[in-house]
Image (cartoon, rainbow, N blue to C red; front, top):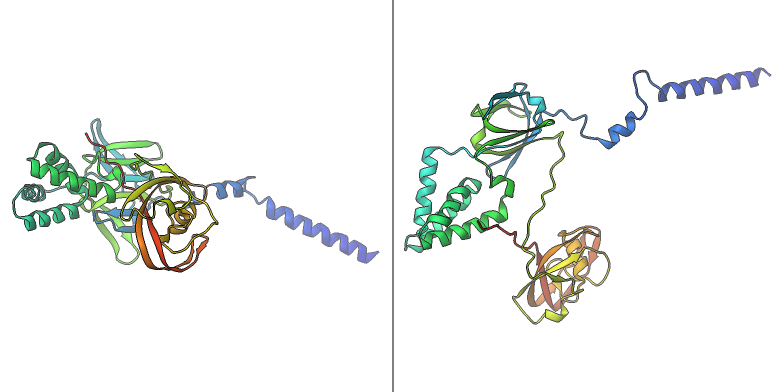
Length: 329
């Protein structure tokens, strides 16, 4: 009898312990589910990633001081903890503006090497040269306009659209909305693990995003003109060496596949785009295919959950993202 009572008491004690673990004081029902649904909620919003003018990124922490924005309706003070994203305006000195203007002027000189050098310098400026090049494409001489258009197309390929347009003012995003104006300071105080507190020059930065904010999915506008349905494989056009095609493809798995870009022309295109990482399985998009002609070898491998085999001496094709469409004004 005593053993049964002791056993009953032990079971009752275990029950109380389990009850206490589930219903802790101050813990609301469904809190675990809420945390799982919003894993970013616990992240300090002042931890940010900054994209610099050269495309590099820094992970730092904003100092605990407000960011003052001069707007059309006066100054607004935004607490650092409320900042979720900033798209910085371009800040060019008069000297930089003159240098860019000189490079654009050089695009029209007879010296081919000088034109190439100027074009390289302008391309290196990326978003900083965008607006002057747009103006040159509209108002410059025929030679300058032609070179400027070519540079605009190249820049459109490598710089996100949001960083090329609408950049005369800073845009500060908070949980309550967006503030458009000019940040009053020339720099922001940031804290780094390696070097302590530093100043971030706004002229050197493109964007800032709080790690408490999900990264935006970039939807690129691509040239879909002439895109054809998925042909299955490229055997029918393998003789058209050097020619490119656009196909609308839905990523899939399985099927014949040899190589790792280039692929053999009998390789299933919908599997190749997944294998190479252009699309996910079930995702539909436009892909560019270039016919390569006979190639000596194809190297297989496993990528993105799909495997391809090696092969030798066969016609091949290469896949890539199509050119993004730059709107003409």
